[in-house]
Length: 104
Image (cartoon, rainbow, N blue to C red; front, side, top):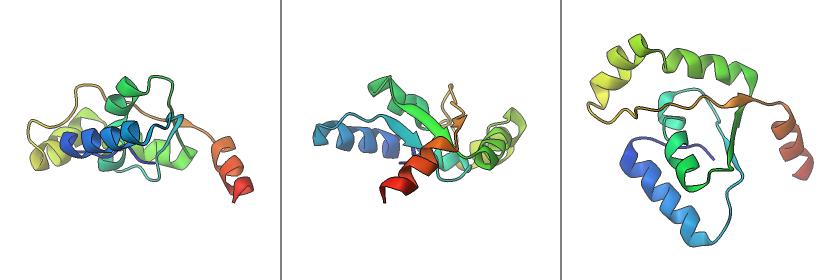
């Protein structure tokens, strides 16, 4: 699952997961646009053991999207006052994708 953004969206997502009674273990970032990972810190606050992972190429995009200059010019302009103070970059993992494909 992606950790969506803005805050209203990620909080609704976390509430939905909590209501399901399930324990989230993995946050799989599907692509590197900020609106798909800026909410990781919020999700991990409720699920502190959830591991954020993405493919290596996506990590590169995440780093570019979370650079202070990019945030101020692009994300800050579109979501003023809503950019989280803490932005978490996922860890690169081919393993998680291979395990997911094997279970399908």
